[in-house]
Image (cartoon, rainbow over all chains, first blue to last red):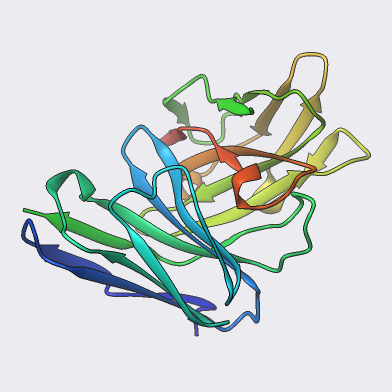
Length: 115
Length: 115
C-alpha cells in the first residue's frame, strides 16, 4: 500500500463550489505539505504543518484553507472554487529532522478542474 | 531569498545517449540541494540530494549530480539513458533554516527519450 494517499484522484467541479482534498499518510511523519503544480511553473507551496497544532501559510495560500485532523491526515479546502484553481495538487510528508535536510515524500496527486 | 533556475524546459535525447539537466541556484547562505523526478501520472520522488561532503552525489537509477559552489550549480547527469527515464525532473534548494518555506523548486525539465 502507498505511504501517502490522496483522495479523490480526479475531481471536476463548478465555480463557487466548496471542495475538500484529503491526504493520509502511514509514514508516521510529523510534517505535511500541500502544493499545487501548474504546467511550466513547477511546484508552489500552499500550506504546511509541522504537527497537529502548527499550521503555516505557504507562498500561495489565498483562496485555500487546511485542517490537520491528526498526525496522519491533512486536508485542503477550496471554500469557493474558481477556474484559476484548476491544477494538480500534491500532498507531501517529511520526518521533520529539521535544518532543511528533509526528504519529502509525495502522494500521487489530485487533478482538480474548476469549470 | 533563494531561487532555482532550470535552464531547459525540455530536453530531447536519444536512447543510450548521455544527458545533462542543468540547475543553477541563488542563495545568500549555505544550501542543501535536491533533484526530484516525476514519472507520468505519479507524484515526485527523490533522485538524490547534496547535504555536505563530496560534491559528487550518486542517486537512484544511475543518476548523479555535482555540486559546484563557485558556479552555484547542481547539474544532473546520466551516462546512458533509457526509455523509462522519460519524466519531469525538478531541482530544489533549501537552507539551514529548514522548514517548508526553506524548500524552493525549479520549474522543471521534461526529459524526452527518443528511440
